[in-house]
Length: 425
Ligand SMILES: NC(=O)c1ccc[n+]([C@@H]2O[C@H](COP(=O)([O-])OP(=O)(O)OC[C@H]3O[C@@H](n4cnc5c(N)ncnc54)[C@H](OP(=O)(O)O)[C@@H]3O)[C@@H](O)[C@H]2O)c1
Image 1 (cartoon, rainbow, N blue to C red):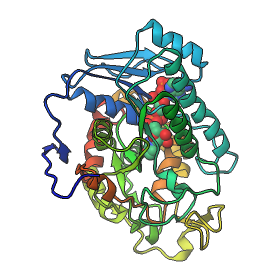
Image 2: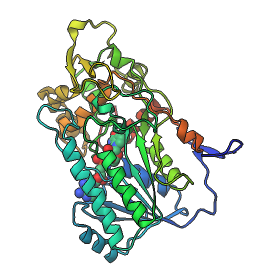
Image 3: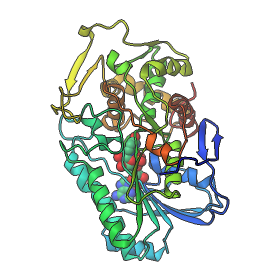
Image 4: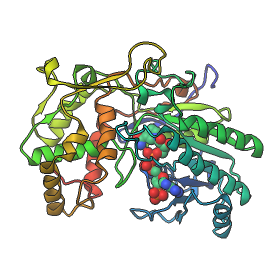
C-alpha cells in the first residue's frame, strides 16, 4: 500500500481518465496473453500494444486464429490448454515462448444443468477451468519458462453474486462463499501453490460484468443489448425494460474491458504483495434507469420502463439458495415481463436478425448460442440485488483509472458496427 504523501502522475485517453503514467525506463517487456481472442484478452493485447516500446513482444494464445490483424509485435500461437502439460511445454519450447509476464484469461463455460442458470454446472466449471490453468502452468514449468509475475483474472462471482444477494459493497477481504463450488477459488489456490513452488509472483483481479466488442465471448453484455435494440427498431417496437422496479434501480459496478486491461497492466507492473487480489471496476455506479433513456437516444427510438407495471405484469423465479451468499435472508428473486432469452427465441426476432444481417453483410448471419448470449444479459438486467464492488483498495495502492460505464457501452455499440457485428442505425 502506498504511503501517505504519495504523488501520482495520471493522464486521460478519450473516455478513460486517471490512467497511470509509467516511467520511460520501463521498456522491452514481454508478455503471454492466454484467451487472446476473448473479451478480456482482446482488450489486454490492445492496451499492451498502445506502448510498443514498453511491450516489445506479446504472444497471443488461443485455439482459434485471431479475428483481426495484430500489430507486428504480437505473435499468435494456436494452443489448446486442455492438452497435456508436456504437449504444451513442447509447443512453448519449439516456438521459444518465454515472457516476463503472463496474463491468463483462457476460460471455458460448460453448458448449464437442465433448467439451471448459465453458471449452474458449477462442478464442471471447476474441472475444466482448473485444467486450463493447471496444464498451462505445468507447461511453463516443463519448458523452464516461469515468468516474473502471473496475472489471473477472476471476477465478481468470487462474491457469489450469481447465487443471490451477497454482502454489499463487495470488498476484496470478504470471506469466500461456500454454498457451491467456485472455480475462482480453486484457480487461486492452484496458482498460489504453483507460484510458491517456483518462486514466481502472482496477482488476481475481480472485474464485474465486462463491457467490450468481440465476435465471440462466453459472457458479453453489450452485444445482446445491441441486438435487442437493432431488432426492436427494425420491428417498429420500443425498448422495453424487462425487469421490475427493483432491477431498474439496482446499482451495479461494471468493468469496461479496456479499463480492465489498463488496470491489469498497471497491477502487473506495480509493487503489490504477491498473491494479492483486487476488484477491477469502472468506478462509476450504473443503474438501468439512468442508462435506458440514453440507450434509446443512441438508437433514436422510444422506450418503456417499469413505471406503469403492476405485480400482475411480472413472472417470477427464485434462485435456489436460502440463505443466499450474504448468509441470511430469503433467496434472490427475479421478476420480469419477459426474459431476453425468450425474446431472442421468438421466430419473428430470428427472422428479423437474418434480414438485417443479410442486408448489412454482418459476420453473424444468425442469432446463435441464444441461451449463453442472452442468458448473460438476463443475469445483468434482471438482478435486483446490488453488484457494487469497492475501489478503495485499488486507490490506496495508487490506481485512479475511471470511465463512465454508460459512455463506455455507447462507444462499444460503435465498435460493434466497426467489426461488422451490427448495422449502423
Ligand atoms: N466476460 C465477463 O463479463 C467476465 C466478467 C468477470 C469475470 N470474467 C472472468 O474472466 C475470465 C476470462 O473470461 P472472458 O470473459 O475473457 O472469456 P471469453 O471471452 O469467453 O474468452 C475465452 C478465451 O479462452 C480461450 N479458450 C477456450 N478454451 C480454450 C482451450 N481449450 N485452450 C486454449 N484457450 C481456450 C478462447 O479462445 P479459443 O476458443 O479460440 O481457444 C478465448 O480466447 C474468466 O475467468 C471469466 O469468468 C468474465
